[in-house]
Length: 158
Image (cartoon, rainbow, N blue to C red):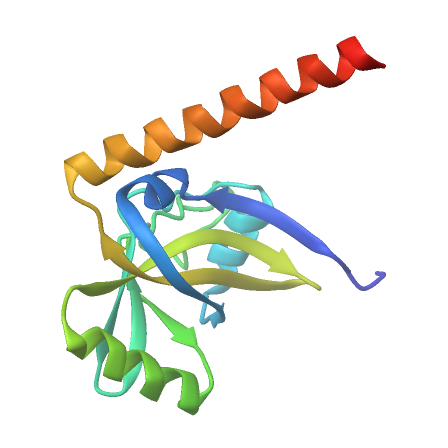
């Protein structure tokens, strides 16, 4: 069987970019069971309620839903079990320091296969207040409107 290359997106947490200010992102490996990998290869996962937490010098991913593999037997996995993230020690130490600062959390942004291995993109993020969310939406709409008008003007000239 040929070796898989490239990046195949499985799940994305679009809500996270709306609810949080993303300060920094990290790519981490996942410790998975065989049936979890098969369920992911089928393209089934949800990051909606997911978050990462540091415990005993390790980072754990909580509430990420990977449904049971339909062809699995008694060896099937629990859909919302906690999963260990694989990061370099220096990255873990850096994250421990920043999350203990206060107000910062670890949120999964996307789950994907990179060269055949399951990876998760985790973001160091600060929660937004409701008025910040409205302000961000207004800025994005204004930028979209501006680029639309610029495009119309360019078409008129050309």
